[in-house]
Length: 117
Image (tube, rainbow, N blue to C red; front, side, top):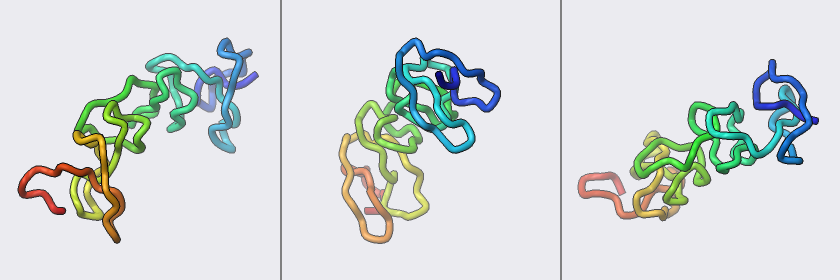
């Protein structure tokens, strides 16, 4: 048994997927295989799609240049800084690739002219 979704008021149920994941010390275990629109608490692995969106709801993979938290959220398979600036947002890379830049972290490759590289 686990929470039916990643919500403190969600009840404990027998998971139809047969599995659950530890999401946090507060929420404890949440069923896996959650449908789009269900609360996932930032944990990709509880969503059937493998994507917990920026709004903490299960979603389908997001498109290029959309804000992301991690690569699993992106249809391109890569989430990194939009340019070589430590304050730049994390976005799904159009190129599907990134490179590590010292003191900035991972930055999308194939940046447009005028972007910090």
